[in-house]
Image 1 (tube, rainbow, N blue to C red):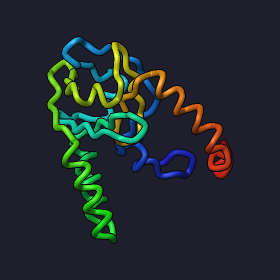
Image 2: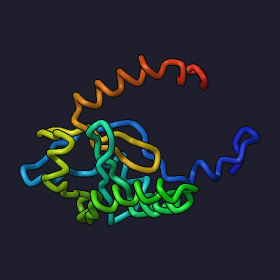
Image 3: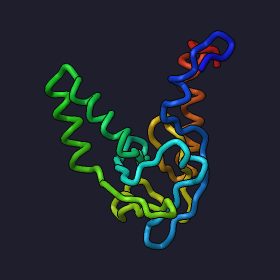
Image 4: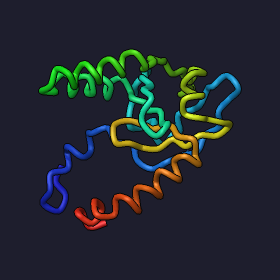
Length: 155
């Protein structure tokens, strides 16, 4: 498809999660994936990987497979080993139900310091699950510590 002389087909077919939504955490650790993100994927299987800054990365299966491909292309065998050892020992595979709910294991809830409400943040091809206060602090630090980086692209 062409708009204003630009081919947009890549943009329209690429999985993309943007923005953020707040959702409640049920007593059993279950959360609902917001409807705003459901159009970007039809995945039934997701992978949760603990990340830095006490966030949880939620990868649809397709994105996780792409991550595995990126890892396999790393030049350094040592880098591949470090990353695969971390991801495969800490990742959890989960299946969503028909109402787009997933259950986060207790050890990951504790790792990310999640309480009764979480902030789900778009991360392009994955979603990040945050404690709302932790994400606000992280976001503020990005704007102050990363200001030179933002200027490089005119933000």
